[in-house]
Amino acid sequence: MPRLSRILASARHPGPAHCLAAAVAAVPEAEWNIAAHPAAAQLLAEAYPEVMAGARVIEVPFAEAQEADHDQIRAGLAFCARLVDAIRPDVALRTTPSTGWGMDELVATAVAGRAPVIALQDFPGLGIALRAGAHPVAVGGVDAALAPDEISAGWLSDRAQAPVTPVGWLAHDRFHRSPPYDRQRAESRREAGIGASELCMLVIGSGPDISLAAEAGLVAEAAAGAGALSPTPVTVEYRLHPRRPAAEASGLAEALRVALAPNARLPAGRLAPGVAGLAAADIVISRASVMNLETMAYAATWHCADPPLSVYVLAGGQFPVAGYWGPGLPATHLPDGGSLVIEAGLGAAISRGMAARRDVGRRALARGYVSDPDRTRAILRPLLTGSPGDRASTAQIILGKNDKTI
Image (cartoon, rainbow, N blue to C red; front, top):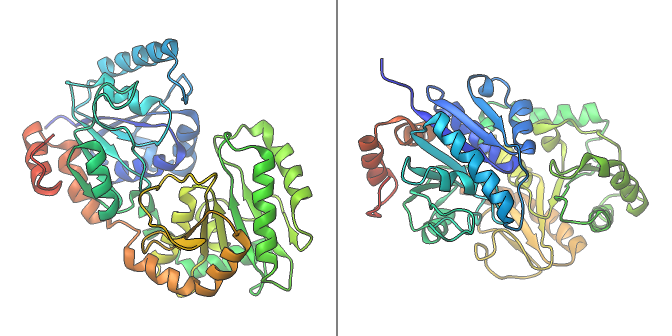
């Protein structure tokens, strides 16, 4: 019986952890070892207990950082070297955060010359430094990459100088197995006590780099914009970012209550977690959360005729997909992507978006957010479980015409 392929995967953030879970589900016969920072490890354990039952999740004993502290780097590299020596991976699968450093960059360095490194992109535009030497921590680059769609594949190929293939949105595979969107929406709203004609807005919290005052201001502006469209109070649900310290939760909740417009209400934990809560919302707002994409993907999977509105709010003109979407009016679509991206005028953007959200939903559906599980398995299995020769030939066939193979 052939030996199982040993895979060393890494995840710094909870968002890409969804993609790793889909990869584990697509190639369950492999021996999976996932080195994850605490928030990502927690998500894998809580959201995917059955998928992760056959995988080994290793919680990384050091924090990610924005600045490259030499002592931290040395300690992190030593940890990774021990991990690589113990696992002896055949393949390394890393995710592609946009800033800072942590396990993803260290893995690329620790396995350099010993196993191919494949990057897994979870959000268009992420993965700034993937070439060898392009990151102060990651001496090693990537040998191949997997992207959500054709647009991001072209961008990532230029950045990584490696073959890239679009595999669909791996994190959205779970919507194929979720209850039909309209049925889940009706059930979630009934359980939350939200009437059919009432507006429900879900605001996804930002990471700890955004102040509590800024978070409260965003929620207040969004609530005022949505309230102008509704004769009844708007239900506002705020979800704390998994990387924001839990100790800040009570202070943030109080700031939100004070900041909310008088025609909005902020019930604590009224919406169910996960996809059930996403389905209940009419409007989803964040600065740069994958949950916006997940909301549109869930609706698109089940061909929803009346999808929610997804709005991204830029912070100081910065957005992870900079260079990926084109210039436009105060509110502009991600290219056929189903979300509004705005720099100012949140109230006007909500009004405009709600009026056009059916067209926006058709764009999301046409773009095909959700990956085809069968195609995903056909691509991932030979890359992650084949012999070196199999992986090289598969890369040439599937990953494009780039001469560089893994």
